[in-house]
Structure formats: structure tokens, C-alpha cells
Length: 396
Image (cartoon, rainbow, N blue to C red; front, side, top):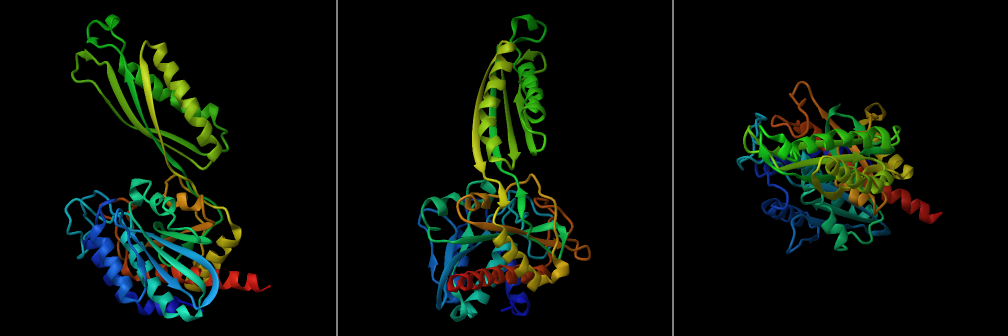
């Protein structure tokens, strides 16, 4: 079964979905209108839907006529707090909110895949769950569905992201590390304020904060194994009220990225020790709030990765298979991957002629509608091929 041509025949329909979603962009945890649209469209296809009274997003259920495994296809549905400057004629109608990360594409492509799979429901050897997930940009949006048990019984999961660094017509389904974990921290330094002309009476929170920022990098260069990628970034520092007052408080926020779950566990206590002792050496105290957020995205199941690559070859041809380096960005699909055997792929959307060259989260980010059938076909192809593969394994 090959979904390349059937998906291409749905290009106009998938684009129509995408344009509606783009115009009605909604922020994380606020996707009420989007959710109602998705429920209505799935029900038009005759697909039963699970919705939630206390959460956005929904899950569609396609039950194959033949017994078999259950595979999950996931698309995220939230947008970003961005003023749109993409120049498309279906720009967001919600001021300051834009689909600048391509989640409208993911959602429209999964709606297309839903129709493709529903049309061959009688031939499927198992079941397909269609997760339209709320709040990916909030780091923890996927937790609800997993923690509440809505994904119980899923044997494998597939996620995908449009990627402007890869040419349109290409798919990267590579084994191993793909995206990093993401943990955030808030660090507050307390000192003693004084007049700027009398530093001897102060315990300068800015000096202590500056020393902490510098010392944090020794965790990267000396505490961490250099063969393991690790990023510690302080992104904001807020301190002081006037040029001639030595402030008594400094607040910093930052992020930590790695692929290694071991370093995640040991880094927090090491960071607390370093922060406390650095502050104390300068007569200050420090409080560290440490938030574990997203798990790393690691394709750790070679068999699933091979099914994804084989599916992609049917959609874009062998020449369309690419391998790109892993990156330190994050994706909350990692929470699902940590609990269900999964694979995550990147779908190329770079298109010079269309002007689709801007990075994710740019206010000028755009994707050509011609890319959408590729994603719909890949979603459907992976689900069908996985169910067929596992059915054959079970029959042996």
C-alpha cells in the first residue's frame, strides 16, 4: 500500500485545513477553537473522537478490520506569541499569535492522514490513534494524555516536525540522538544594598550573580564529560533600580540542554552546590528553582526507525532520505518517547522559490502548501507499514 499519490490528490483539502488553522492560531492551553474544528472534521470522516472536559486537543480512533497492534500518530496544535510578518494571504486573525513553528502544518497533515487511513480501514491490521496535542510550546503539553492513561495500550508512536533546514521533498528519519532535553532554572541572589559610592557596606548581588554565571560554565567544561553535549545558558538577568545603588537582589533565568539522562540527574545537585558556595564566598545567599521539563528525543528503536525510513522512501524516494546532525533544541514528544517505543522524524520544507527559508519561530516563517501531502502520506505510510510489519511478525 502506497499513500504518495492518494495524499497528493488531497493537497487542496489539506491546504484548506492548514489555512483555517493558521488564521485561527491559538496559544498553548488555549486551543479551544482549534479543538472544536478538529473534532468536527474527524467526525465528518466517521472517526470516533475522545475529547476532554478539562483539557484541549483530542484523540481520533481508527479501528482496523483485522487484529493487530496499536500505533499512535501525533501532531501538536498550539501557536506562538508572535506578531506575524509572513506575507501569506491566510495570516493569523488573532493579533500577536502566529503559527511560527509549523504546528498548523502538522495538524493539517495528520487530518489528511486520518482521511487516508480511514479509507483503508478495512485493510488495516490493527488500530491507529490520532493524537492532536495541546501545548507543545509550554514544554509539558503531552503529559496530560500520558499521565491520565489515554495512551494506555499504544504499542508504538510516531512524531514529526517540519524543518526549514532540509529541502522540501526530503525526510530525515535517523536513528539515535535527535533533540535534547530541556530543563529550566530560576536563580535568585540576595545581598545587602548600599550607595554606589560605599561598596564596603554592601554585599553586591550583581557581582555574585556575575560570578555564578561564569562558574556555571565550569559544569560544562569540567564536571561534564566533553564527549557529551551540554548547554547551560543564562538567558535573562534582572537586577538593580538605579545607577548609584548597589542592589541587594538579582534574578536570573536560564535553560539546560543535554541528551544524557545521567548528567541530568547529577547536574542539579552539582549546580546547587556551586551556586550556594559561590554566593556565600561573596557574602550573599542564593536560591535555585530547578524545573525538569522535556525529555530528550532519541530514536532508540532501530526497527521502528527502519520502518519510518522505509515509509519515507515510498513517499519521497530513496534520494529524498537525508540525515542531519542532532540539535540542542527540544520537543515534548520526548515525554511520550520515554514511555512508549517511538520514532521521530524531520520533514524538509525549505523552498527557495516560495521563500520558505526562515527559521522556526521567526515572524516570517512560512511553508508551501506543496509540502503538506508529503507529511500526510508519511504519517499514513508509517502507521500502515508498522501495523503490517508487526502483523507479519506475529504470524511467524
